[in-house]
Image (cartoon, rainbow, N blue to C red; front, top):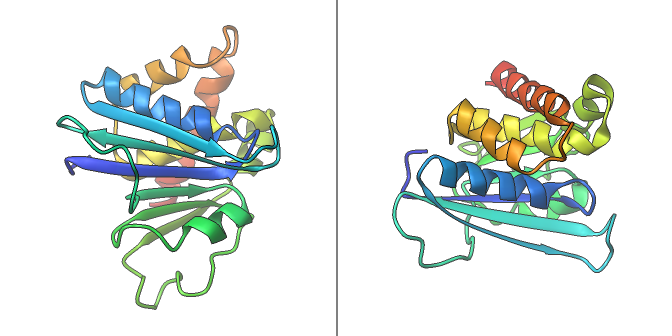
Length: 187
C-alpha cells in the first residue's frame, strides 16, 4: 500500500462473507500498525440480498469514513458488479468472480483500460478446490492482498485466524493460499 488512504469496497450477496472479509482486511491493517475503518450495508434479507462492505486503510488518522472512489473493488455477483463498477478510482483494481461479465465500457482497449481488471474463479475455487463454498470470502481476501500488496502474509494470516471458528484454521489457511495463488497466476 503506497497511498495514505486506500479505499476497498467488497460486494456480493448476503451469505458470501463479504462483510467478514472486510473486517479481516481492517484487522490486518491494525495488526500491521496502520489505521482502519470498516463499514457495511446489506439488504433486509439475511441471505441472498445485496451486501456491501467497505474498509479504509491509512497511514495517518482517518477522519472521513465514507468510501467515495474505491481503489479496489471486489464483486461476487453480477448485480453488485453492475451497481458499483461505475464509481471507482481511475487506477482502481477490479476483482470479479469468473462467473460474471464486465459491463461494456470496462474492458481492455477503451478509455477505462487503466483500471486493472482481474476475473478469477473465486467461488469455484472455494466450492471445488477447498470443498467449502463458505470459504469464498477467505479465497477473495488472499487474492485481494496479493493483487494490492497491502499486508504481510503473517498479518493477514493472524487476522483470518482471529475471525474464523476454532478448528477451521487449516481449511481457511488453504483457502487464503488458494486465493493468493489465483492472483499470482493472473498478475
